Image 1 (spheres, rainbow, N blue to C red):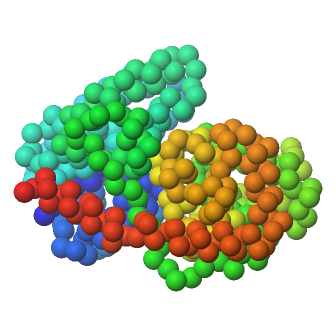
Image 2: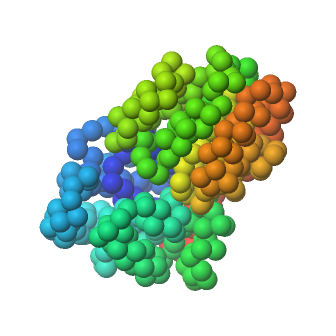
Image 3: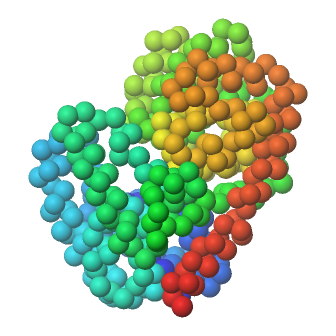
Length: 375
């Protein structure tokens, strides 16, 4: 069976890119032919390693070159890029003749079901239904986000299957006949577990509004006087790096809070930490939470839509703070930072809980879905 995945690019270190790499490698190792089609690869290599049998094709659309530009700029360039995208993707699909084409809900989602290449079309979303509204943009951008959210409700119905990550998110979409839930799988199948003795808290993700790292820095500013010697590493990159660095300076947290570039040796980062904190405004099913649990890390997170409430059992494998309760986030982190016994107890339970997301179990759901569409 041949499967084509459509995504913006594989060159970033984000959770969606990690999920796709793991999924593609698994499928390739189990007899599937996998092709990844990108729009914004810019000649860069994949951040996460891909099996050599996986072919990658970039369409050279480059939507990202308009990011950060004005509303008028987007309005001017987006329709032409959509036209080029549809034309080039249609040519690829008709040439490659896949059995199944999977959209990662990037810029192809609105038109890919109109390409009559014979393949079944699957849409998978890595955020919640409320993703666009949670951008918190103003003016014309806000109106555009509201309009696109309404279009999303129509778009998802046109696919043969629409895959969401959590039961919580499934409920928000309503009673759709084509909707199904398949969570992300653990990235790591490891017997290793963090010792949870280092005075180190970590957070991982792109430096964007979504991840809310400025809220985490504010929380650290609240608790840091009571925890000398403790450090916070925020691993990632992105457009808000300078803003976050300025906030660290403003709170005089230099030497305590460090912005760290992504690493491919992420397992060492988890093993060196004693706690993972997540300050996101919205998610889908956060890979960092699954990975942290696999390494036996307790978690403190805002109870944002969607994912943390599915993964973290409050008071057992970590703590959930009310959305935007920065003081509450700081208090919950402090509970674990001051109590080694509690950290280790929650870490053991987190490790046990991670088995729910074992790769073989999750991928069995995907292969069953693909088989049902082909059959």
